[in-house]
Length: 395
Ligand SMILES: [Mg+2]
Image (tube, rainbow, N blue to C red):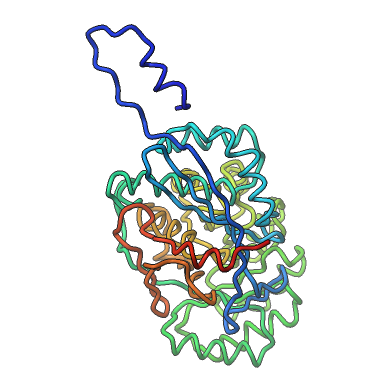
């Protein structure tokens, strides 16, 4: 609904009907780029390089009724092509123009408008979308998961831990620490060098014993022959699922790797939107799909893909781009309210806030070892300390 439509009703001749009350409207959007170091022990190394500092764009969406929502664009240029400054420019100069004046509860219409004016830019779009859900929840006095139909699983999720592509000794030490912390599923980053990848996974399996679930994630870093060779060489390590062995876009190759090795394949970078999900399904290229609101352009779009996959018998899980407090909360609301985000079968991770040196939330998600709990407070349930944000503003 655009700004003029509900107001224009007032200009109509008044008959015997009751005038609808004007909708709450978005009247301003503020964007703040910030830069936060990752805690030393959580620094990530993957086929995409090192992740030692995070940049985010925090998005404040204001309405004419004084209700405010917050969103987060979790930007990683080498992964999604987005940056804090790029997302800021996209929102300030392109997306704001088509969402200011809209009813923040009309999420599908907001999505449609954003997609009409900008291709991709999923994390920027998701920041606005999650802020709209936040507004809707705060206005209704309900947590976002209630707006999505209620929680279909507990508010506490058991996470896997995503371990970097470390040298073998470091990987051994870290694996033991993770076991001691209570993790029962460990994802190991591979895709940097086939020999080192095999050595690292073997070493972790030795440390953790047979009862811990191991998965691997190549982040698209292997080619087809290397993927097949590594997966076959690791057969005795009992890998539960292999995440994104080949670069995004190569659906036929992914299907061949799956058929040739018999390994279960988890698609991640291969699935940003519904069209890509349909490609995966048409090619029988995967056994599960990793989804998350940032990557998929918002909570609503994530759920559309989850439902599509469910109709094809494909479970989904949740992935992470090291979200901060707001982005992680959006993930948790989506997880607990979406049946086919099957984190019981394929654990995901939503530990991003614990990776960073400080929190901007006065009431952050509860993170204790592998367990993350979402609040039942209204909206996304995260109140931001904007003074802390200002201290870390970029530029
Ligand atoms: Mg991944």
